[in-house]
Image (cartoon, rainbow, N blue to C red; front, side, top):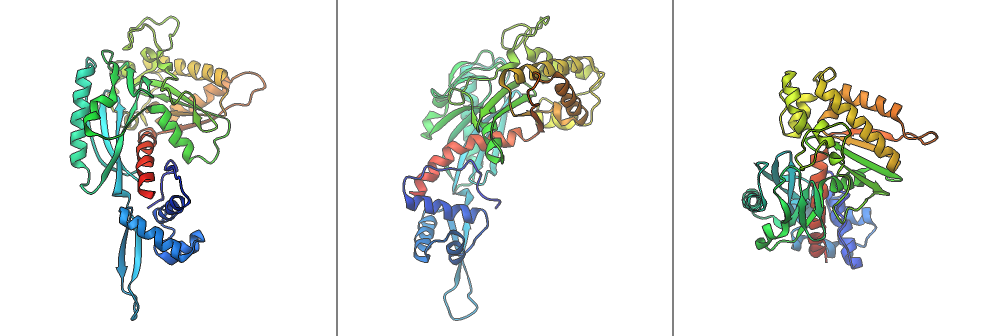
Length: 391
């Protein structure tokens, strides 16, 4: 195992629980596999290590096997962390589909199912899809794995504290949707968060430097942003921030899926560019991962719809930098998988700049949105359940 996710930070009310977590994390990281090694690595008394290991084995978080000692003594115990003891169900929006994954303590995806949800779907339709996906992913998960909870990672506008999905331009008929009620009969804890916020939290948990402001902009099927100061997403608890895809663009008159006119997404969103790309001979999948693979080596400059999209994104990113003055900017999505696009975007933003005397932001491109979003969303239910087993 590569070690526990840095997002696994269970609330630990006692010193014993904290020491048990240190023991488990050390085993998960592969830095020890025996009691003596744990004692040396953690500077704990052997009796304390034995007590903690006994608790972890009894709770199912650690498995102990025995190997012959080679002599007349007792067989030595080999300790292995069991990441499958707990898992969270994570719902994600993927273009025009909803996916449900079962994610264990190591961040591994044990099972995944998805369904296309047509744009005209309303609250009742969405509730039916979510219930069916939960049935499917639960059946596909290992039978010995305890489900810690359900986490919704959603696009659009949320009331995260009330666990309600207020609006999504992908499904305009979906309004004030009670996500918790849709899966409530299962009796599992439910949390709701904005997808870009949990993705940014995961990115920053893995980063060595989180000082200053970090701006994440996703340019894909839809367009959105998240911003964190000192590692904490702005307005993350509320679930409302950075709907830049629905900024009004002067001179644009195309209807947007949100019901507005001339939004940024009508110029630069993958859903809006698809027809123009097809006319240029580029059949781009709606799945963003597959779209990134298709666009990676494509010649996009010279395609009118893309050039309009590119210019709109340069202006939007420049304006965001002049509002937020981030120390670093991360751009994700299928378009920046293309090396020529990313190189041109960096050059254009360097020219666009912020204001005289202000240092330019560090620009990064990244294609791990789906994976990091899933890890970030799974953290809340896993931490709560893990704390219970460590107590």
